Image 1 (spheres, rainbow, N blue to C red):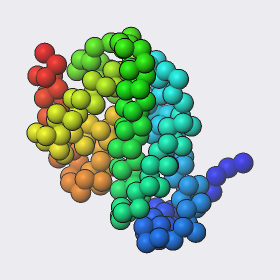
Image 2: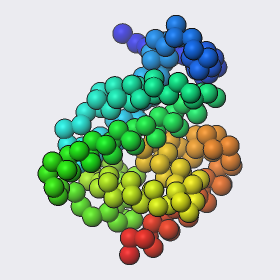
Image 3: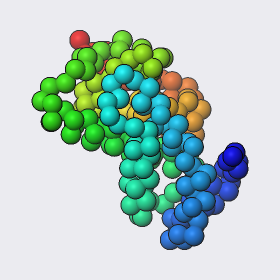
Image 4: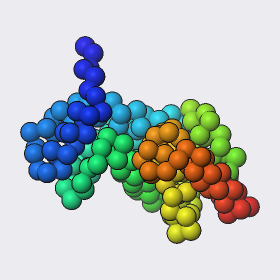
Length: 191
């Protein structure tokens, strides 16, 4: 059974209605956005370090957290997916924090810039120390919030440069510069 394709304009309209309290469009939004959120969550779980966390768990938790965002005025689908990347980051980090506190240690490899590059290029073959990455992104955010967003959108949202540019309202070259800066900054921090 194939899913109907919904235009971005339809989704934007439903998000606007949902932001204004119209709960009748919620099922339409779930149906239209589920594949996007599932893809984002699945991207994270291609790693060997995925542990017991499952794609459907991430998607379910993400939808619950997104539904609780009653005060957000959704601008459009891209804005929604950008916020979703942040929510997925929070769900994953919360999961690994809980897992880490139970194990008091863990088997994840130390984070290096090379590991980040490898992870982005081939996520299915890499373990990722999510807690260390989260800490690094938090530090980067204090220096350059836009560069931190680029890394977050790339790693947690699987977004492309054009998608990030649209979300951030900047040029693709600006996104590329931020990505280069973020990688350089992380390299210095990880030495």
